[in-house]
Image 1 (cartoon, helix red, strand yellow):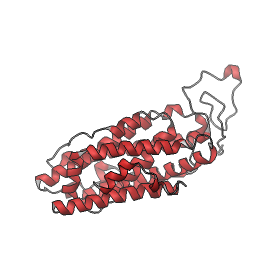
Image 2 (tube, rainbow, N blue to C red):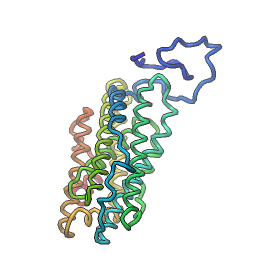
Image 3 (cartoon, rainbow, N blue to C red):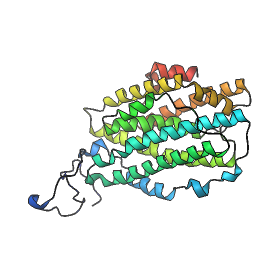
Length: 302
């Protein structure tokens, strides 16, 4: 019951641990395409599922929306642009990850249960930050360039997707959520704190999955470097072209333009550091020496 085999032999919904029916009475195949454990497994998935249930937060009732006070128009517009980007990113991650549940066979149900919590987290972020952008007299900002979005849509393998949305995007977004200068109200702090707790679980799953994948698929583990490089290049393409977000962060992070620029540079370095430390936790060392040059340039010259 508690042990997941390296290969799941059933194409239908035979529960793991149940006595399988005879072939003639087993029923029609389900639409599963993933039957090998290394393609999706993470040893911490069951624990993360339980943790996600305990840490669930409800934006409608647990955020002090009444603490949000009127801000200068340019500050509110800047914050709303950041919230718009966060909501848009989470929508992209959510709808792509959602499509992978039907691919994973019943034998790895712990993974499906954990992923259901990550999908719910992303939906919560979409709802909460969209609401925050609308609540204080502002509104939604400008759409992102979308290079990273299209990369997420184009992921052919589950591990590739995890590299993009958990490891790379998750690291950069977590560093943003942990920035002390961006929140301007108690509600903002609560929103970012809630998101940070969720993202820490997403990173933990991504780290454990990459470690398992590299241990058990020695033939294809070199693909991870390719996926990371592609994700970094597309992340850089977004950041270097997203003028509305850059200006919004400068206005939202500092009291003056010069202070905002300095804090944006600090934020970008913190995001890269978080990403590299996440990779180190997954046993991918010295990646800073081979990070995509375009991404490094965005960090150095934000």
